[in-house]
Length: 300
Image (cartoon, rainbow, N blue to C red; front, side):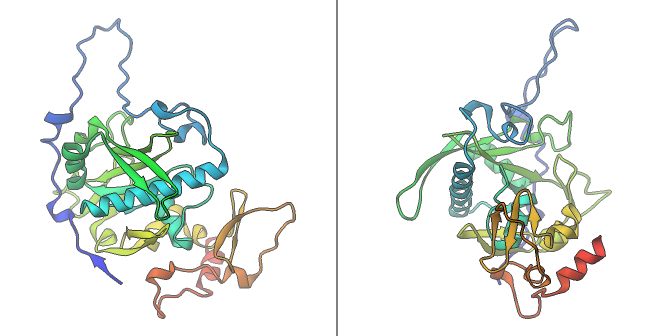
C-alpha cells in the first residue's frame, strides 16, 4: 500500500490571493437592493436542481445519464489532477462510496473532493476557467469540463455562508459537477494541526496524512489515511453496515448497490458480514468480517 506524505506543511495562508480574486466591495446606499455575494448558482435548492450549475443546466437528466455523467467526470478529474501533479483526495459521500466498492453511490447527485490550501491557491492562479477534454479508454465517450475557481477562495472563514464551495469541475453538457473544497489551518496558534473547510468540517493532519493510494471508478485515487474514522465521525457507524438505503440494497455477492425490485429482500446475517474495507487497501489483518455486525448493534 502506497502512501503520500503531507503537503500541508507548505500550505499557504491565502491572504495574498485576495489581491487577485477579491470581489470589490459595494459602495451602494442603504436604499439599493442587497448584494448577491454567492458565486456558484444552482437552478433550484432541492435534491435534484441543487446539484446542477445554473449556467449549463438545460433539463434534469435521467438516472442512467446521471450515473454515466458522474462516472466519466470523476475519472477525468482524477486523471487530470494526477497528470498535473496536483494533490487531491475524495471526501464525504464520495469517500463512503469508495469504502463500499470503490464506486460512486448510485443515489449521489454530485461528487466531493478536497485539496490543501496551497493547491487551492495554485488552482486559482494557474488553472482557473480552464477547460479539459476527456476521451474514455475505449474512445467511445468524449466530454469537456470546466475548472472554475470561486473568486472568494481568499476568504478561508465561512463568511456569510454563500461561498463555502471553493471550486467546481463542471460537465459542460448538463451542468452536473464535482464540488472542490480547500482545507486550511485557519488558527495555527490556538489549534495547530487542525484543518477546516468553510462548512465547519474539521480534520487533524494525522487523520488525513499520509494519504493512501487506491482506486475509484477504475482510476487511481487518494484517500485520507484514517478514512474509516472520518466516515464514522461524519455518518456514524451505521453507514458502514446498513445495506438498504435510498431505494437500493447492497448485494454482497456482486459487491454492488442494486435498485430495489418490487419483491422485498430480507437481509441475512451472512450478507451483513460481507461489509468490508475497500479491496485495494485490505490486508489479512484488517478485513472486518463480523465486526461490522457488532458495530451496527452497538450503534442502535
